[in-house]
Length: 298
Image (cartoon, rainbow, N blue to C red; front, side):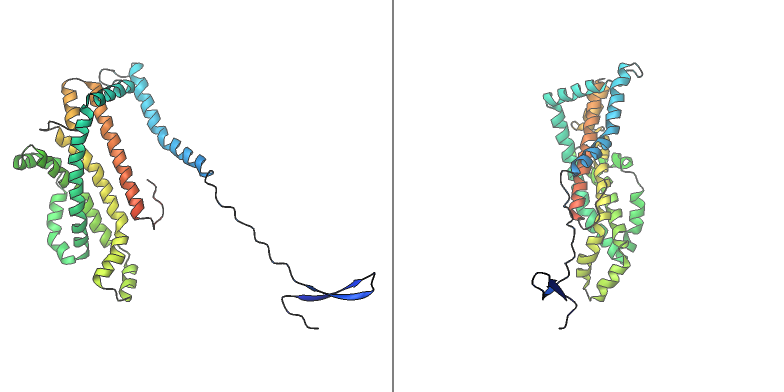
């Protein structure tokens, strides 16, 4: 009798019957170990440890801020304890001043920032992709990008007045350059191998731009957008200290003149919290649009 590779024929003699019985024995299938699925609960300690690590420096700063004035290490007239700043913050919130000034600042900042994104991203893609446009506009870019926005604030006020237009325009000008320059750099730094592969597939110029250039440029473009988000808050606060009747910059300046030091620090803390929240929002959007890449460490 013949045998194959998958089975073997053995003879087993029964001592009671004295006969031979043919038994077909198949080799046992190899056992595979099941890989346990990661438990969601196992991630919780790691997330808690990461959150505690990130908040440790802030907790230490607040502890020093609270104890240094109380121990007489600094004059509490000029640096009140953090608890007094918190009380002043809630006082501004109850009186409605904080909401009014915050709304005025956010309206100006987001308007200028949105206009900068709307103008800077398409213009940067155009300059980065078409060399003749880049050669035409490069001298102007080099001239204006080295001119500080706050240095031009008097010019904006003289031309546009002290109303909302001048403040939105100065935010637009300050935010435009990080977005524009990073977008140009993103287009020019696309991997040449990707471009050669796309051209080998006979993709048209619009399809090449849509399928290769835009996806590869998104991470660097968002870097410029995040930089512009921080600039939009900082420049606006400086602009509101000159010729404004509302806004967080106006609140800080007025509190300083009236020697309301806790209220002044409350306005500064509000600006910091808004800046951090705005940056985290932009980080979340960046992760959403670059989900195909490795996770970001913000």
